[in-house]
Length: 256
Image (cartoon, rainbow, N blue to C red; front, top):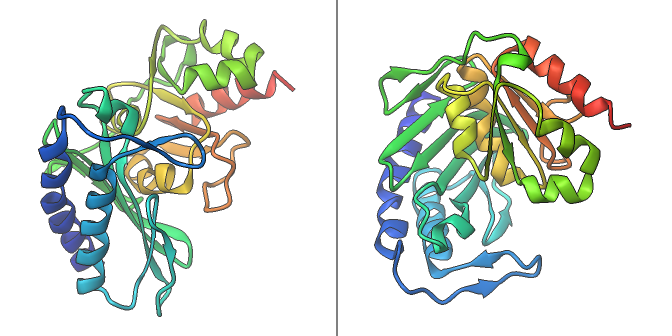
């Protein structure tokens, strides 16, 4: 397993050159069937990752955002989001990420989050997690939601689908910020914030994050408190500890 993570770190590091060469340049932007944007940078980055992974692990499966799912000959499967935050990417915001995770029998084994423009990498195996190869990650020890720093991801979508919950979130905690994509979950893993609530995600958006958050001591589930899986509905909560998680679960349940 250490060798697979080492290979994944090397491959993802080399892959960062692709989005970097296109960042803040004039790009043709296509719309996918779900009306989300995609660029040549998304496609070329995933293509590089897929080819490099299959060269090293030819019997493994791959599930990527841009080119779908390809079955392998083993229980191992790589899950890829080449540019997590294409809207950030095309608008010149450096907080897009690159997500790469390994699943075994559809369960997360480890995950890697790279922030190409920040030159940061986060990795974890569910038991431990680190930043930039050697800095251990640990979540916050604050256990009171009233004192928490809360990030609300995809706020406009939550407001449209769950207006009462959105209003409660806007008065929850001591500090609130609206955000998108993977980086708030990494801020949580690093102990800078206490909670993230997220919405309308796909498996390649959240499964690579799980082992990093949990390896740092946090909890990452769906809005019902269940473990995340390929079948999850895309509503996600990350919390620094069980107390914050339980308080958020209570907040969410008030709507029903």
